[in-house]
Image (cartoon, rainbow over all chains, first blue to last red; front, side, top):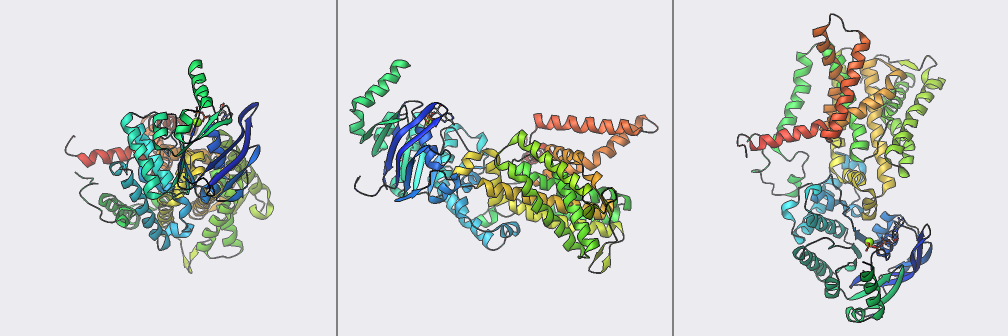
Amino acid sequence: MNQKTEPLLRVEDIHISFGGLKALNGVSLEVYPGEIMAIIGPNGAGKTTMLNIINGVYTPDQGRIFFEGTERPLKMKPHNVAAMGISRTFQNLALFKGMDTWCNIMVGRTQKMHSNFFSQGVYWGTSQKEEIEHREAVEWIIDFLEIENIRKQPVGMLPYGLQKRVELGRALASEPKLLLLDEPMAGMNLEEKEDIARFILDTNEEIGYTIALIEHDMGVVMDICDRIAVLDFGNKIAEGTPEEIKSNPKVIKAYLGEAEQA
Amino acid sequence: MLYRECGNYKDTYAKDMAIFPIPFDRWGLGVMLVLAFLVIPFTTSDYWLSSIMIPFYCFSLAALGLNFLTGYAGQVSLGHAAFMAVGAYASLILYSRFHVPLLLSILGGGIVSSAVGPVFGIPSLRIKGFYLAVSTLAAQFIIEWILTHWKWVSGGVFGTIDAPDLYVFGWILDTPAKKYYLVLCILVLLVVFGKNLVRGQLGRNWMAIRDMDVAAEVIGVSLFRNKLIAFAVSSFYAGVAGAMVTMAYYGAANIEEFNLVLSFHLLGAIIIGGMGTVLGSFFGAGFMILMPIFINQALLVFLERVPSDLRANSEAIVFGGLIVFFLIVEPYGMARLWHTIKDKMRLWPFPY
Ligand SMILES: Nc1ncnc2c1ncn2[C@@H]1O[C@H](COP(=O)(O)OP(=O)(O)OP(=O)(O)O)[C@@H](O)[C@H]1O
Ligand SMILES: [Mg+2]
């Protein structure tokens, strides 16, 4: 990865606290175009909080955020962040339970659909054309993730691993410039993890999306990521290639420290 | 195999995405339309047309409006009857004072109501669930108060305006059958429009907000826009329903008819009929209209004459009991039961 290129996303000196708790304490990160970047760290380190700040779910107390080279306001509505080209999956399942698989994924295309209210109501002309066009894009994702056989099933009934996969599909549907994945493999068995790892790599290599992910499984992280940033108690304690991180004494201490507490 | 999903392969997405992709459903709908347009008006009495079918259609439309907001978008409302009242008064004022043509007056009633709805929907951007329910209750009280106290609107006489004769294109609607057709035509148009909305991107956005609002927002759904549209569409349907029930059934706009009890009944109707389904709105409204009649008949079996307080109490008990039953046992209401029956028929006569 050429570090000289302009980062796709840069967050600078982010501070946020909840009540008295400083969840992030001056963290800076960059995500470069085309890479798979991992954010790792012990429980409660502030990883999910960082994604929430990038998405606009939380507004940081202090800091700066740049996307594609231009600074964006710290306080931004999440759907406007989505419109900029940032998509996301969640640590805890966050599917729309009352809908089928394909409808869930279709919601991911909402920023791309523009037919007006009346056209949707009569389902004629632009709206019908648009609906079919986007359905085709959704079917492409369904094929890509190998979930054809559940396309019309209500997602609430699906096993956990498949729900995670549908959620990935929903995030892909917006064709994002930056894809944020919060523990995409948590709670999965080995086989399911391998599938997801393959999809993530394919997404990166074949479709060319830039990805930042949070993951606890070190094996997977070391395997698929180009670069890793390590958070601990709201601070970034290390950053580098998998090899550099593996041998970094601070990282080892943070993880061993956690192991001792446990 | 009466109900078949498989065996009819859809070779294009266009066919798969047709409004009723399954032939059985299309046939079922066709039968219903034939019944509604060609059979019912010629086989039933004027009493049935004017006292059961017309209010049934009007309240179905109102229930559908509430279903958009509550069943699809997940925003509880206890002020739905008030939006019906807005439509009722607005349309009647347009028709009788400003001599706007009837159809445009009804449309106008819907439009005025759809302008008022989002105002009371603004709190939904901040609060949800119970607190939102309470704030929509405020809509009910505020609108009722305004309609009774604002002399220009109510004409000053206990908030009542009489409906004059109804003319459509110079043709007088003087029989129950003619009024029935007026209501039915408007209903069919609005149901088709609404069905298209909920199966399209707007409906998916609404359900996304209902199921998981933070995720919906992060994925790109604007809560502000979609919630306010839900309030606008919902109160538009309420407004048109209010206008029609006033002109074709009550014969006068009377604020008493649109009180909090009706708001509760409509909410109960969609819970019993089925939240988040178009069909459920019809089941719920049908239930709301027919149940009191059944109860009355049932009581007559045991009693010579049914005291009105006994009747009212038994209605409340049965209605309340069923709401609790459906909330606990079948949160998707009668529409889901209907689905289950269809599922059974799909396999019938093979039990596996
Ligand atoms: N909305 C909130 N209100 C209060 N505290 C919060 C909130 N969100 C996060 N926190 C706190 O901030 C800290 C960081 O949480 P965060 O969810 O970012 O951790 P994480 O690194 O994602 O951990 P995990 O690996 O367990 O997911 C935690 O102590 C958490 O309790
Ligand atoms: Mg987390």
